[in-house]
Length: 550
Image (cartoon, rainbow, N blue to C red; front, side):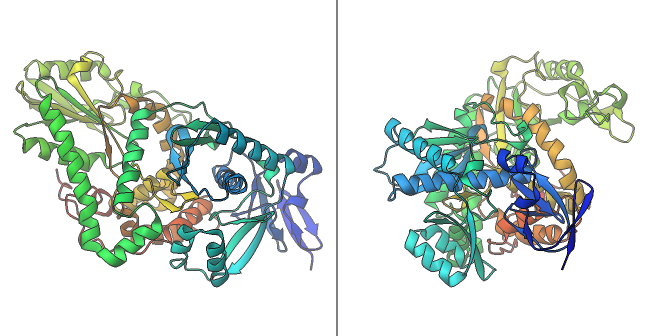
């Protein structure tokens, strides 16, 4: 039966079932410019066959969802290359520094060296040149388990028992089979853009990013960030919580009380280590600066750090950078023509420095409070501190020395906070750190602002742009990196996030993102939050924090 498809506003009648790829012009097919398509607001691979009325939008490298498909396809390609060249060498992917993917060799006897780099690089080039098709096949879970056994994919097999569906959608390329929890590009010839480099003890894989216009960003080493990721992964392995399957098993075997308190104990230990560092240098520390990306848990962390320092006889005071906004009419404008409150120039830097210097000098200071209703500073409080009291400031610009040019660097102790999750669905499929923070924000916005998920999704791109511009450039300046990730948090947040995601209408522009998050969350077992402590960082997002009125 004939049906209609609409592409770029033009409707055409199609006589029979046809693939999305065949609806592209010959020139676009040869150029391999489009990676996937949106069909009636659902992401489809280009081999998908349409047989019904459909509104079709082809997605290129400017689409975040399309580039996630490109990245998953590239991981497939690299896994296939290792399988072909080193069939007995298992590897693991993880998100890493400079928006890259690290490749870990799981055999302790294997060494990443120049010879291995050359052989893998040549195999990748060969596979891309051959333009081999990715064939999607559907098998029941029982057959998938046999395939996993045959391929020695024990990590995938461990997660299969938590899969709610009864079938698995594999992709075959030649004789190689793998499951990537994602659509793939039509063939290996699409994957020409990547950079592979030796990066001890394994490799680093760079790929095009949508936020960079489909270009591969310049590689920027970040040893402090890298060290934190390694510590996160090492600890997750120690407690057997480095994959979703292992986290689920931990919930089943250890139970919620032990698992939750185990994770909280690590946060307590990090706070203790941090408190000791500050105490050891307290004669010089005058300003404790805390910064991190959205939904890192900065507010709860600052409160807990204050308690930690009080327990050591140190009485810090907290000052909000937000109280130093310039009057609304003086704020710089963003691309949308509205005041850009994330821009450092939106702050009254001169007054902030004057007040901090005066406080450090022992003077009495009238501190402002920013009235967001009036859009200007009003009187806040009168304050004097003594020489033993450090000042805690928290905000996106706290690590930027342009905020505090009048304060000597030796007087500042800088802390970067962010959830540094190093967990995987399986060895070939890491969980995104950014998606974890997005879920935190969705739950928090709904809980405390009654904001629908649609609103949070709409704001997220500008939030991310602000993070790249104002936060990540300064993270390597930190004296301490606090990893705010809790391995139990996604099982706890699942019951809060799932209803929000499932409520996203199929016609919504955010439906694709919601579906992607659902595909990740569905593998986690539910974990009740009764035993989450009231001072836990997790309470900042799900509610019930003892700091809510602080």
